[in-house]
Image 1 (cartoon, rainbow, N blue to C red):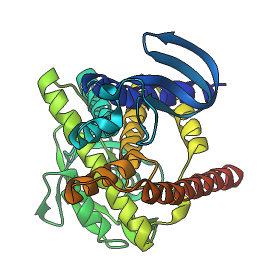
Image 2 (cartoon, rainbow, N blue to C red):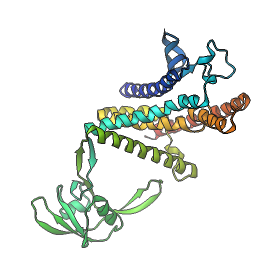
Image 3 (spheres, one colour):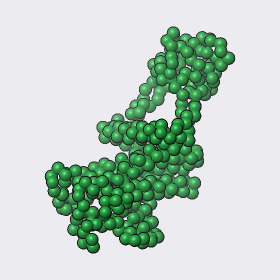
Image 4 (cartoon, rainbow, N blue to C red):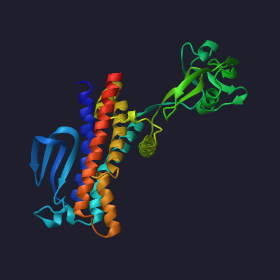
Length: 352
C-alpha cells in the first residue's frame, strides 16, 4: 500500500495534466468535448456537466479526451464544433497541448523545488564524507579539509580534482591540504583502483581515494527558480533523447527499459524519502510522458502530429485508409513496448 498510493497519485496527477492540455486548448479552439476520462476501460464513476461527461475509468495507465468529430467520418451534431472541420493549425495545437502541458508541469515542479531549496554537491574542493578503509582516511584526510594541490597542480574545483585522481589508480600522489584548523600539510595518498561502469554500461578502471563533496543547500528567488526549472527540464529532455539513441545503437542495454511496475516501485521509494525527492521524480516522469507522447508512433499524440505535418505539406489530409493501417502498426509497436517493459520489470523484481 505504501508503494501503490504514491504511484496512483503520481500517475493520476500526470495524466490529469496531460488531458487538461488537450481539454483546454480544444475548448479555446471551439471544439466540443464529449468525454474527459482519467483511466481507460469501463467507467467507475462519472458525471455529465454541460456537454462533457467527466469519468474515472478502471485502468489507471492513461486517459483520454473524446472530441466532437474526432474521426473524419463521424456523425456530428454541430459541424462548427467538429475537430475534423477545424483548420489543421488548431488540430495540431490541440494534439500538441497534452505533451506540452507535461513539459511545462515539469518546469513548474522543478521551479518549486529550486525555491524550496535543493541539496547539491559543492564544486569546491572541501571534503565532505570520508569513507572508512579507503586511502583518504588511512592517510589522515578528514571531513572539512580543503584540497589545494595534487602533485604540484593547483585544483579549484571538485571536477578538476576528481579527473586527476581517476587517471592515477595505484599511483602515489602528493596532496597539499588545508586542514580545518588552518594548517597546511602534505599527505601522500595512493588512489585505489576500482572497476566501475560508465554511462554505456562498459567497465573501466579508475582511481578512487574514498571522499565525497560537501552537500550544500541552495535556494533561489522565483524568477531564477523558473529559469532553472526550464534549464533542468531541457537537460532531462536532452538526456532522454540521448539515452534513446544509445538504446537504438546498443550502447545502453534494453534491460534498462522500465514500465509501470518500476514506476510504482520508485514512486514509493521516493515518497518515503520526502516531499522534494517525490515531486522531483514526478517531474522526471512528466517529462518522459511528454516525450513518449511526442514520438511519431500512430495512436500517440506524436503520430497525429506527424499526420498533420504531412497534411500541411500535401495541402490535404492523409487518407482514412492510410491512417487506419498506420494506427494498427502503432498499436502493435506500443503493445510490444509495453509487454517488453513489463517483462523487464518482472525480471528486475525477481533478480532483487
